[in-house]
Length: 278
Image (tube, rainbow, N blue to C red; front, side, top):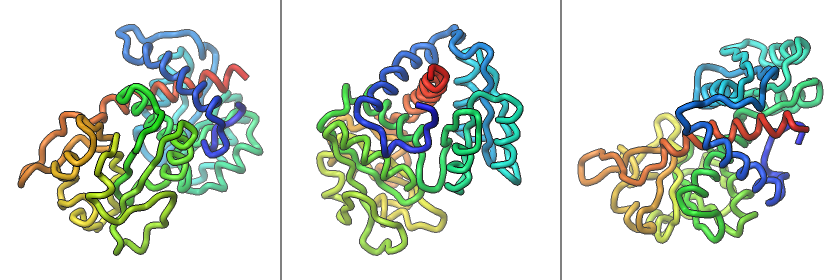
């Protein structure tokens, strides 16, 4: 693996290899002493619009593995900044920007390995973090029915659906029928009760500005307890910590936000290590 731009071309074996490595790296991320030698002497450069989960994760991942991370935020010309880092000797570049062509061009012109840190169509590290979270919460990835809800972070839907299919699992996406703007991908249901019924896990993608939460979640404040209780017992919730119970917003006891954050940095560590082993 020279670059990681998307997960859509990975086989089950390749995906399993990354997840297995991430499980090993997670021991480091969760340990009190977080220093391992895998990236000694390695430089990881990254370009992000602003401080975010992806940027934090790659900075920590590099530090945990004894490498050096050079983050750049708010660059006017992401491609030029990344190519400059490559010319200066960076070993790995993480590019997070909406423009897909910038990331593709970078992978062709850079001497360094390139990781897509999140673009308009793909979010490979985020999807791998979701997969690892599901793996730890549900003791495996086979024969799962995972429900996606919301219309914001839709760049991960196609990749997550592909990855789950490799393990014989299914991603279902609930979108209300009157949402005519969001591009449908994969299996889409427009009945909330049917979508939540029996789901093994729920992924809250979030809502775009001015979206009516009532249409997507059953409440303007978030997913309702009633809908969550129609899923499997102790159904994990990714992407959100809270649900609506009656008129109150309460922390959902089976939310996986903390686990997903630790899985995100673990995946970043695994991918950085595997790219440097090539």
